[in-house]
Every structure is written in structure tokens, then in C-alpha cells.
Image (cartoon, rainbow, N blue to C red; front, side, top):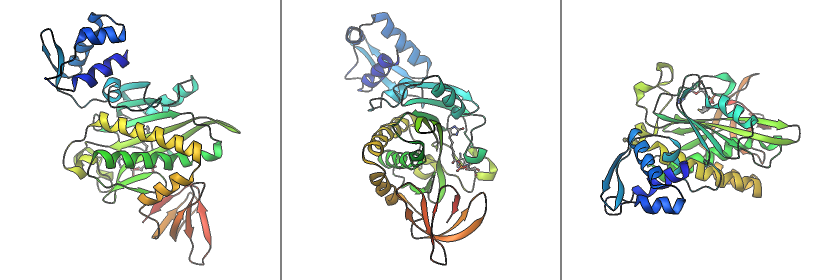
Length: 324
Ligand code: BT5
């Protein structure tokens, strides 16, 4: 029961002067005293250092940097998102597993999170480098009441949630590059991959694949992306707690998805534009068909990037790679 375990963790964080009574927790949750003791042992085997004071209880001395369910859930403030987490040590891609889970009826907000991906993917099947233990590689299964036409905007909803979480927990100032990149100092910090399971008129699930570079050093990136990629710890100069950040992203994601469903795209668009780094700038646009230059003007009410061509025509772009 990850509920009791994450509650135990949360309370043990209060420190030596406020130990958690195992007896009391057991009574509150209607489990045995032995069950609590087992959670303590489990946490120790996961790398937590736990102190105990006779007759008073347990307290936390030190935490490892893990993204196990209880580690993330102790920080969560959501109703639904992240309440069910499947953690995997290593897998080819969390997107694949999330698609299976979604087909098998996964609840709204279920998270598949891995310490390592061996075949992480970006858009158009490009590879996504996912070094072991260094990042947040997760897929969030969402079931918002949206039409399939409203699904692409979820990428922008997720982008806003992620920059808000980064801003709150670090000193880094992230920017968003349409449609799915979050940058710091001009380098890529996070990528988002939005995939859809739908009937013609109804969304069944939108799977948000989120890849966040957290604790990599430059040498942890493959040679070919070293010049274009960065991580929070490179920008911040110190390690960042992955569990706390994961929980914060989920908090904001739940909030902004609800905002989008209730109030439409306008509030998200305003937030998004306040973080955008390409608006008003000259950009080069590469689509599958061609490459051309234009000036980025903003995003439309349906999440397209609006650009002004040199002859003055305005064009709305659904999907492309943008170079500033
Ligand atoms: C993306 O694609 O940016 C979407 C990345 C989504 C990854 C998550 S991780 C959890 C979930 N499971 C998956 O398998 N995927 C999702 P795109 O815009 O196509 O960018 C891909 C390009 O980014 C690559 O061609 C590289 O140039 C670059 N890249 C690859 N790995 C990177 C990294 N770790 N950091 C920064 N840039 C990277």
C-alpha cells in the first residue's frame, strides 16, 4: 500500500525532534504495527537512512534520489494525477507501456516512470537520450473530456505545467520553443511527446511523454547532442531532487489540464506566450515538405504557431521544427 508508505515518508521528514509513532500510524490507517515496520525496512533497502527512538518512533536522516512511487507521492498535492504510479528500473520506452496500460483501462492521471529508457523516442521516431538515474522519463495517461481536434494543444498545456514546476523548485529560467521544447540558455532541457488514443469524435486517452534532463553532466549526453542539450543541474550548479520535481510537474499538469477543459485554450495561450522565446522573432521552419523563413507572430486559439511570410501572408502551422 503506497498510501501508507508515502505518508510514513512524509511524516518522517519532520526530523528527529518529531519522530513518527509506528503505533499511531498503524491505528490511523488500520494496518498492523508489523506492516509499518516492514515499510521501514523496505525504505531502508531502497536507500533511505532512518533513525529510531525507542518508544517514540522513526525519523528520516537521509533520502536517496529515487523516483519510486512513495518517494514521488509524499510530495503530491493532486486529486488524481500520480495517485497510481508504475515505476520501472529500465525499459525501452515508457510511451509503449503507457499505450498498453491505457488500452487496459488505466485510470486518468496514471504515470509510468522509468529510471532508464533504452529506446526513448521523440517525434517522428527520433531517439531520446534517457541516461539511467539522471532524468525524469515518464508518460502520463490522461483522459480529459476533449475532442481529438483539441488534443495537440495538450502539448502546450504540458509545457506550461513543466516551466511552472521548474520555476518553483529551481533558479533556472526556462523558455518554451513551439511546439514541444523547453529550453534553458538556448539549450534543450525537456521534450514532450503527445500521443492520442481516440474514436473519431472522442478522446479515449492522451498520453503525455515527458523527458526532463535533471542531473546529467555534459558527458552524460551522447556526443551528437552535447552542444544542444542541457540539464537542470548543469544550469543550477547543483543536483535537483527528481521526486519533488516529478510531483510538482504532476500538480501543475492536473491544474492546467482542468483549466483547459473548463475554460478553453485562452488562459493557457496567455501563460504559454509569456514563456515563449520565438514570438516576434525571425524563424526557420522545417516541415516534412519544405523549409522556409518567416516571422513568428503568436499562437492561435487552437495551438498553431502563426507566422507572417515575407509577402505578408499569415500562415498557421500544425507541426514543424522551428529554428530561431
Ligand atoms: C521530443 O522530440 O523532444 C520528445 C521527447 C519525449 C521523451 C519522453 S521520455 C518519456 C517518454 N517515453 C519516450 O520514449 N519518449 C517520451 P523531438 O522534438 O523530436 O526531439 C528529439 C531530438 O531532441 C533528437 O533528435 C535530439 O536531437 C534531441 N535530443 C535527444 N535526446 C535529448 C535529450 N535527452 N536532451 C535534449 N535533447 C535531446
